[in-house]
Amino acid sequence: MKTERGLAPVFIVLILAALVGGYLIYQNQPKTYSTTSTNHSTIPTSVASTAATGSAETANWKTYINTKYGYSIKYPTGWIVDDQCMAKNPPMGCSQSQVYINSLEKKKFNVGGQDININYSISIIKTDRDPRDTTGLMAYYNPPGGYKEDKINNIDVLESLGMNNTLEFFFKKGENNYIFLSFGPYSKDSKKTPFPEQERFYKTFNQILSTFRFLP
Image (cartoon, rainbow, N blue to C red):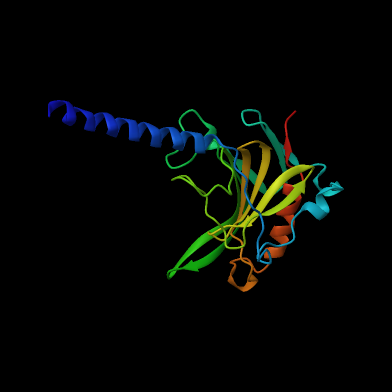
């Protein structure tokens, strides 16, 4: 009887080992993702159609170079770079890879009965995850319109409309190696944005996107 009782833990260990082994094998399998979508109408026409030619307008812009994560991007007068998150002792609540490019132009907007100042901002983050991978606790938001494949400066890009009134662009550097840019606030309904001249800012954002490069 003692021998029979002793077999039970052995079987449990073997079953657990098989489950863990199967999971690890699954995780190591190459993943394929579908970008097929029934609705890309929520994503505005991207920079791809204008980026190829570059622009004389961006020639004299300032250039931000991030050697740690291997990219550069230009920005115009009236915008500033905030890279405090890259510091040795970053502010609480931000990722150490996060960089902001902020418009200095602000506008009051009523939220919940209070007037707050809002400005357009571009957030840039390094990510080691394909945004279409919806498994696990760290999965990205899966947009209803899906992800649209594009190319900017011959770089593969995934585009989507984010859940927090943002436009999202994932520049692919390699397998599970992306630089993630988001632009906001953005509304497909121009009447819901605090800036009536939203298209002017979107044009500037497109020009900024057109200057993105990975460092050699």
